[in-house]
Length: 443
Image: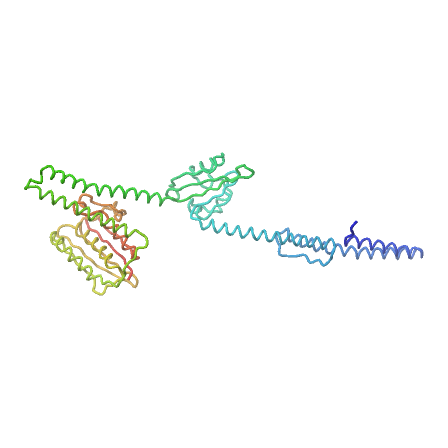
């Protein structure tokens, strides 16, 4: 049998008490009382030696139970109490380490969920919301405080997502569906819901909502772009083919009309050339890594040169084009691209003006930006067309635009160039009154 510290203390005390009692009991009643008192004193000392460390251990253990793990039990005794104290200290250390690791992991997970652009919801056994990230709060227009603990449909009234969640709880596994929202945010979203298992039983659901509105919009724009390009190319090619066939069938010998047919073919070929050049320009502007050759650029002489280039066109329609810019207006820009911008805008101002109309070019500036306005007093733009005026191939008056040789890409190119320079372009217009294009560029 192995004797530990406390057992040895008790055995030694019993032997000592027995020896003293035997010695004094031989001296009669006084010796008996003396030996009894000795036994009580020795028992008290022994009890204190055991109870005080246990009280200390109990006090620290209560702190451990309350979640305070940074305290330690000091016990110099090399007995059961010392062994208990060491065990509790080791337990507290291990728990503290695991709690800190759990808190670190929780903070990392919280940081990841907070930075996600997708909305994330965690649902419990009864489809009650256990947690959701800030993106989900914004997406569904609800606060975390109001949502947590509620059944999904109580907090978020979206039957389409509720059906996806129900499918998961019925054992469908991972469910993915594209859903359109109307409220609180209008758009198209991809909803992915996956089950959370506990002993192979579905005990919850993880829902991830990804906003694909912009992706679908770009797909529509791309599809429309292909359709528009096909249409724009098909029209002149059909005309060219038709007139060439007519000439080949004998019209080439028709001295009265053959030159007119050739002029029409030439006009359509030139239109195709302009269209292809605009498409290449737009593709180049939209490509990544485009570099601008920025240099100090005086705007007044640049615009004077553009106006001179349109002099024949403006005189033909009696349109007065006035450059109101002062000679000291200088910007830091790519000359060729900025010239393209004002060529397009001034060309439109002349084309869509009224007979004997006017075009006024003016500017105003502050410490960082300059605003150049190109204002005409022509036919104006209807209210419904304003939001789409900078879209590719969008035309307000399709028949007149084609007749004037326009491709429908000019203003889209203007917008791209201005934005590449860190500026903006805006439109003010009233139908039948005129239009003003305002281009803001950094000085």
